[in-house]
Image (tube, rainbow, N blue to C red):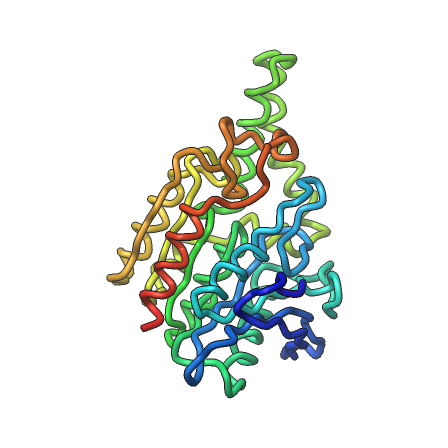
Amino acid sequence: YAPPAGAPYTGEDVRVPTTAGFALAGTLTIPKRRNGRVPAVVLITGSGQEDRDEAIPAVPGYKPFRQLADTLGRRGIAVLRLDDRGYGDSGGDASTATTADYASDIRAALAYLKARPDIDAKHLFLIGHSEGGEIAPMVAASDPSIAGIVTLAGPALSGREISRAQVTYAVNRDSALSATQRDSIVKSQNTILDSAAAHQPWVKYYLTYDPVATARQVRVPVLILQGGHDHQIGPDQATTLAAAFRAGGDKDVTVHVFPEVDHLFLVDPTGDPGSYPMLPSKSIGGDVLGTLTDWIVKHSK
């Protein structure tokens, strides 16, 4: 997790205390050249247990949060990235946690940054990917002091609706299935989800949570980034999410869809999740990084 050689920022291993009584392990990168306090970003991972780089073992070389930290650090922005609770070097128990609990962890991260003398508490941002793009609005809705949030493939539908769309996409691509078999698989999805929800708090919360209702309560600046080839969170959800923020009275909402990009924000001709490991590049492109970083820098002034 250390910075690359010659980076214009330093990396510090940190422990973030939470109200639940455990600590989150992370890395805080801070620009070397600074005149007083610096703006800072907290990165929020997607669903499933992930480390502070948001690495995915099935997609070797994919470390988007390391890329974001490096890019933002070179533009004068501090970045805090964390191992999820119960994963890596972080404490806590993920088996009983819901998305709301992960939102509490992010509030703890913000409190940690606000207490540091080298961080500008008036310019703190959240950047969330996938489920992280659901968590960022949850935190911002109750904390108007946040300078802005960025959602990367943030959902606008309930988990039940998202799961149904994902299963429908998968079965429609399987030519070995008959129309009857496809229909049967899609119809059985609710039963499978309800069974999981009976034993897994995260699933139960995920199925019914409404991101649109929360978005209507957010008043801080919002940047929505979305991949046009995303088949996990469809690009139409970016439009729905933006409309919800604006309907609530948020006057600073920007949407940018990258046509050739998938859910991981990698250039991808099909966007099929099954092909992620075979993609030639596992790095986020400069167009995505530049759009995001320019927005953060602009709102840091």
